Length: 276
Ligand code: BTN
Image 1: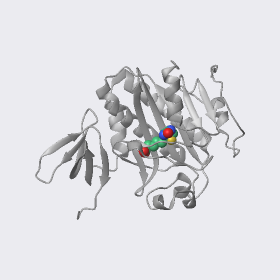
Image 2: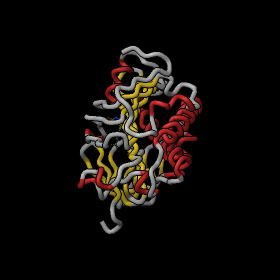
Image 3: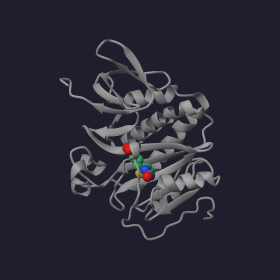
């Protein structure tokens, strides 16, 4: 597949007038989405971006799909979205960082997306460490950072924008929501995507220039976990305790019932009821 700067590939027409193929017309980014591929249907945008990264596509290459047939989430879970109602996209990043710093990128991204959603829609998300975005206990955005291609990362973002309750599988209805359900009105995907990319580029560049401190401050403004009782699975072992802080390097600090404090650099967090 050969593409030129700003070229996008649309395999079919988009189902609504909020046409993501118009992305570049008003996008104010320096490098993000200068190469832009748009698919009506894809397996997984992360997989496509990962293949492109392997072929040497540059940082900022953006892959967007209206629908995914093999969308993937964290912990090998599937990620489903009905056609044209979500934002489903992946970016190639090539940060010069150590593998141990990759978890910081996930926090940079979570904070940037929370800020962009807030500015664009007025919805103030809460971030569950490391980077799931929630509103009143229901998730509307998931972020998957994959680092399996040499010298690059693929950053995949799924935002539930215009789904209604029936669009979610029954087993997800009590835990998932969309921006439309939160606001009670349709939300335009195109300006939201622009805003996310612009915010993300700015925060990512700041991270690459000056390190994690600024993203950490921003993450702390949106976090919704500190002070809460949580369960976290790390490498097959489960810990239960209170989330008490975010370390300078992005690790979650957990205080165990006996008072011992442990650092969690990766793992899946679940909020507990206080009486658990
Ligand atoms: C999570 O488990 O919360 C992360 C979900 C990430 C889903 C997005 S949708 C666009 C990109 N392509 C994928 O296959 N996954 C990510």
